[in-house]
Image 1 (cartoon, rainbow, N blue to C red):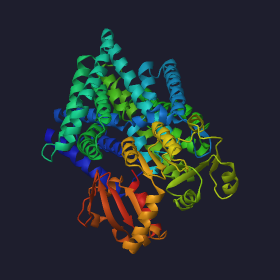
Image 2 (spheres, rainbow, N blue to C red):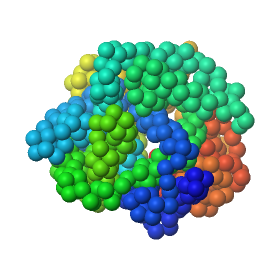
Image 3 (cartoon, helix red, strand yellow):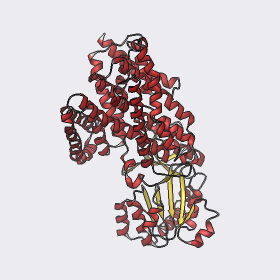
Image 4 (cartoon, helix red, strand yellow):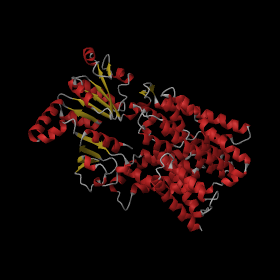
Length: 612
């Protein structure tokens, strides 16, 4: 029977996503579907899967891997003050600071969670106020990220704000859970030892920063050093956590944070995600459903009455998010974003697992909390997907700021794809502003080129900054200031190119644009390769490039792409090397493709391949 239970669990882990894809079920997270199937196969219904030592071990490993991958989900660029505390315009045109909005939103969630827990205790529904508060303030970060990626708004102000709120809704409850378990476990005096866990994480990060770069170079298919390092970090910090009296899930989460800070390649992330979500994590979710005893829940009137109250509390706890978002975004999207943050499952399950070990909650109460979380997790993505409306600002891939108004920048402004870029042009010259203000929709006049003025006005709040003054030195100064302010790509124009300057700018990560060199290169192309010149200058059938991020098109041969006959792939840049493409070339995450084709097809394919 033990072997049969394991076989059925692994079989269901394989079949569930296949059936969901076949039936086109896209609004329900796979984790929720696995819990529901577990309920049907477990003690609540068919009782075909029983609790065994094998399943218990794999399930415990599954929750550890889940927390590790949750730690890897945190985007630390979002926490950078330089990059994300500056105001950015939302789709409603308001100035938004994602970190500030998210902090206020989660602060409201924390207060609401405590008040709801107090209310439940006063009504005699649930007496452990601290545990209820922790559960109510949790957010399922993985589900939120997947939903935002699907909508392609992860990089937009509202997407960043929702994501930061979700990060707080995972990290803070996890830390509170550690304190809760330490105090309630009778080891309150050991609480200060948790500091040792963070010290261990810092030491591992510092010690493995350089070796990891070496691992990436020497790793082979038969060694997979990056994966071995990941599991070493997991078990090292889980062991330290258990020794100092903290929860092992906190150690696993910190291991994920350390791995993230080591800056693993996309290939490493994909391998770890495949191992986790491909095997261990589905077993944890299915076993969670198996262990639910809904018969006892429905037979207990008091526990049954608890279920609708918990569902309402999960939603009410996130009401401050909606109210806070409405001050920064349009009401429809604010409502959708607040509803999405009510999604809670990943931290709730480990929290209840800890509470059961401490005998702080009964099996029936635990079942009521899990079932309420499942109901909420089904409803929230459905409401978000049906309510959230993409605005023109949401659809824009990157923001470009061009400082300097001339014939070239005017041409660039007119030719850049509206569906790819949001372009703003800046100038310090009043006569230029008066001449072009009727032709350039997003034109702004600055009183001077002082760096403080530019920074204060948000000129560096962009993805790409281009400096095209006639003064080469001014371009260098402004470009370097933009790079220091955290702008991802900085391009500076230079009339006279000096070799030393080129090398220095390359080291600083600044790209160079030289008018004289460009004119000469174009003339040479016209003389030597007229067909290439026509491709470059043809606006209907031009050259494009795209970094492949869509996992649906990676790990596959070029010939297997359904649209490969509509474009011509010329070169592929992989890391620092250029490779010649063939039909059998397997595309890897992060590959940069140079391709040509009719602009309508090229535009659609660019959006498809760049989608994360």
